[in-house]
Length: 355
Ligand code: SAM
Ligand code: SF4
Image 1: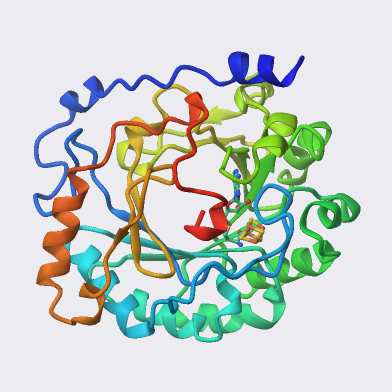
Image 2 (image 1 turned 120 degrees about the horizontal axis):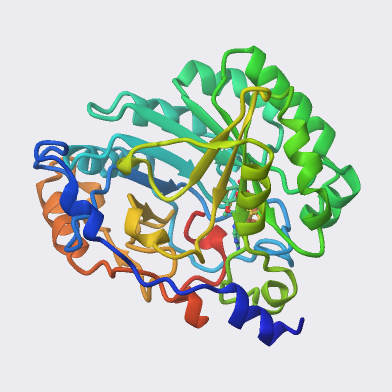
């Protein structure tokens, strides 16, 4: 199959069907929740606290981090005001991401301030797992509820080839300790890549037989910087769904507010398996998340045309103006991304916005 075949056959129609929303019972959602013109509700904020990263993942920062802007990262005060504003508007879950969020020394303080914001029920962290063993006790103390760690291969050599770091064993040991230390909601993010891990999907599924983590396969997304890598490596998640169903895994009903991931469980496995398939039909109809970058830009979509600057409103602890600003801008959110047309928007790589 050639690369052009790939884009035509594997990138499926993403026309969106919102009709199922009319069947929702009234009163299911509160009235103050951020809502767009397609009646999608946004209760989930992915907040980037730095765009800096120390890994060189082939699909994201193959040449390592290069500084793009002199603009400072959000301060704790700004983060507090942003989180308060989103919480006022119905957000219940914050995911702290980056870049690599662990590189910010005040990460525990940021976790804590998110956690103690009235209305926020759940604070999650997405990390590459760097020095997790040293850090996790402080995260637990600060109130972290969930941890996602990116592991694209269980082979130390392949892991090293993808990330530029021979740290797989350390990360797995750290995860084990964090789990035993009380951080039991752990997800592993695995980006599907034809040339790196397509042959080891079954081995990864077997791993969660005894390992109580949720393994999440993510379809590689095209970004401004990774076009060639994308053409050589994009794999659809659909064959994995078929494999799981064939092996007796059952699709969990996660409720309409749970977002676009599909999650499967199996009575003989202690872990679960999830699929995130942004190229599949209707992926965007269940979108429940907004993003704020490390310099305070609001992104309505990972693949939108531009970020919307929230500064200088982020400096004001009276968040009325910021709230109104968010409500107004949400009206501009489009029904779907245009990734299936190869349009990646402003996103050159995910570390820039917060994946
Ligand atoms: N540095 C942290 C990490 O790697 O977990 C957090 C930021 S990273 C941008 C967040 C997630 O986005 C990771 O799970 C990463 O594998 C995923 N990611 C990055 N670029 C991607 C791409 N082009 N397609 C799909 N997933 C991607
Ligand atoms: Fe860094 Fe995460 Fe991007 Fe890898 S995926 S380069 S760890 S930001």
